[in-house]
Image 1 (cartoon, helix red, strand yellow):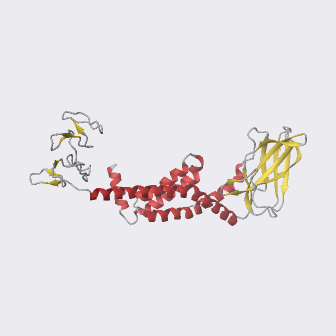
Image 2: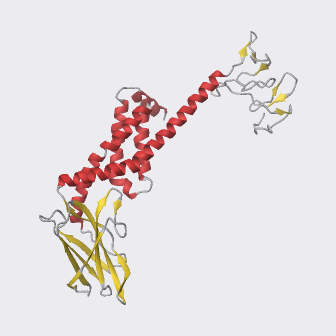
Image 3: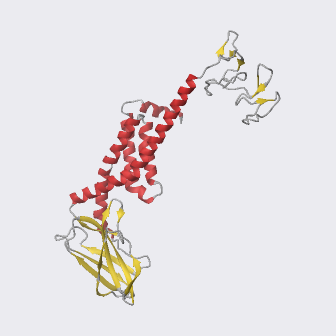
Length: 342
């Protein structure tokens, strides 16, 4: 472990250390965002920790540079992610994914063609149980914040008509839409029952991507805008929150060190003993306070080991070397802080 730390310290001291850290963090972040984060809890949080701490431990210590790196990540990472997502969208058609309800009363919902028809005309079909008197198509543009559907003004619904039956007795419903505006859409179906001329809510199917009514360049731009928004919301906010916490922690530590540096230190006499600079009482090297006058000293606990017995003051009273509480000469535990004496 010590060898690993020394190697990392050697790398971080080089000019190319932070660059190497950024490259490693970028590769890991891409893998997380493209393949892992969508399917695991806290995936975005893991990504934030990766893009912050890997460059940090590789030498990128300046908070200004960390902020620049965070902004650059938000703007640049969506470029390869959008290309990856575009390929996923185009491959979606070959995966035979249908829009279906959970209870399987509405199945095999699909759209033809899937990608950019010449005149913007698309036909949607679905198979539904005979109990449904009405079947509707819901279609909406796929946005940066997910898929908008029922009841929010971003989606549109269309009544479908029956076109026959399947071998297992389900009705085949279809509807054709003309002149769809260029965009990437998602769709779903809703089966309803009719009771005394009023429609009763039935079942919704799962939302499925399609159709893609724009060319590859326009699709890439659409996906890039969506990806930038998502990365800024889910990665950027967490990243800068973490950076603020780390900055606050460092600032508080620096203020503590400055305050400790202003504290007085015991003065060593010619006989090797230490004395309080305020009242000249004899004190132990490394003691945090003067038991006589209460003066506090700047002490580095890494350099000094405090004795594990009560300290005798000038008035023959005994004090805890940790917190200064007056204790009995033969005390085994300090009643103030719980320190044990030998």
